[in-house]
Length: 349
Image (cartoon, rainbow, N blue to C red; front, side):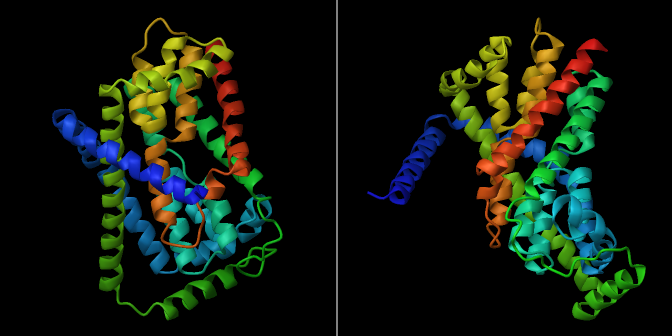
């Protein structure tokens, strides 16, 4: 039996087990679905929708092409992506998951970036937004403003390091456009005019499409949040999550960390909000250790976010494997260094 066929059979078995869990634990499933839906409707949807609509309009009116020409001399040498990647990076920083993947896909569909450039770009433009890090995690969970600042600085520094490493991913691939060696405001204006000539939709149509596309994307995000909320609850109620905790527990023991961090850390692999909340609730654990584990959870982003990214990338020829393959994993491990440095600074503050 081929590996691919065996994988499909295993996936089918897992789906059957998941469906059985839905039948056996209906009350827990209902509560988990409600919790996930409330998280989406109260936080994710209202915070991301305005950014998504604004970004869609910026793309529709050629502003992204304008920024792409101006930022090309910066983005090419640093990250080996076109200047329009600077817009995606900025939106990812401001609005958080999964904005980086969404707008990378948008640029790829418009053929503004090549396949390889898109795979480089998506590797470092998906990150938590400052409001979540400083507001929800630092102040809401840990009740410590200074921790939020340190987590934010290290989180975005780590994403930048990932981008610098991934610039060497398939360096021989042809760029999507001619490389601009100097800033040219005139060329930027011409890019805007060219985009507007190619897109003849009236303003009302552009606005309607922006709203519709943004809402559809957010409904997909909400579905994944509910799905992984239910999955996590089923693993919890069946006791499977406790058996799985030995994996992070072994890693914690290697660094002489408290074993009580294993369960919250594993929870963070599924959903970063739940993981950070459980980490903050622990008592008699050194703040140094809690900060490091919380930072790692933020850097990994959780299987829920990974599934959202994979779903968005599936609309194009952008592969998800560079997000997880050895080169990508090696780059992501560089999150650890700034996280440890931040935790050390915090412990001595």
